[in-house]
Figure 1: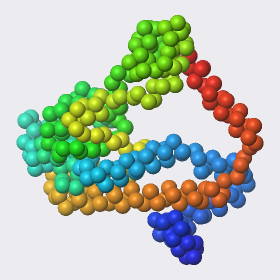
Figure 2: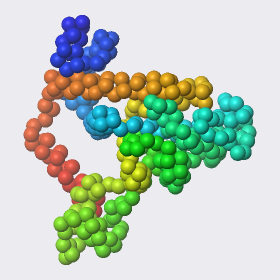
Figure 3: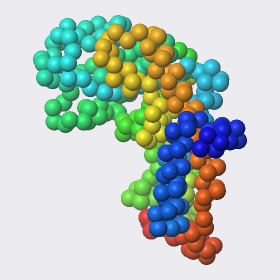
Figure 4: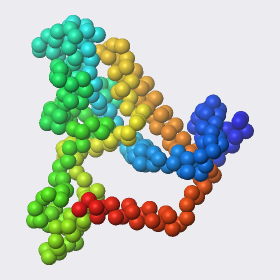
Length: 317
């Protein structure tokens, strides 16, 4: 195992320790010898391809932004039980106390942002959680989140910042969304015309809608992206099942109101290490998968599958 580990480090910059490699090799051996054959190998290697792609693109973009010198601002929302905090207030050192006292046993929704220089000054938002739901995301919506961006985040971040967000629904509210199949024909024509997509006024609605389906992914607009862009900032979305948001480690600390700049820098440095580790791991798995993948079907069956995928778009009509 030591020889294999050294070889992988030399050839593909494998980032893990020998213990990690041993676990990965053991998993591959288990898959291969499970008796379920080639199909399990292929499914195990490729079933998360979509998530892998999103993670890889995130790693590429954040590395580019760092190389260009953009400040990276991590944002997140969480909640705390008031029975776990001081009766005075929760504070990040830059904001005033809550105007109204919150009784013990209630929950506070916390929205904040930070980076390697610490918490963003005056960006802390706190409010009492709605008791109808245990999910703190239920207590936030696009309107409130946009207001927080406009009044507390944007005025206090450095120029040309990159704001990192997760995929909560209020981060992904569409602006100028594509028409759906229930829209009027003229709305479909207007959408296609505005985006210079070739079409004809003589086309029927199913034909126009098919054009929209084929092109709408290229014209996705998010409200918060446009808002931040107006002020010279960019948005970067975290991939699903990620480990790249250092503010989550901040939430896990016992005394969030006493977090220092150095502690923020430490968790940001750790996030960078996680990014590099996954970057190398993806390359390692890619190389190993090429050695183990066995074609599970003929070209004909592959073509049939592609034909089915192509037809799925038509069925949406």
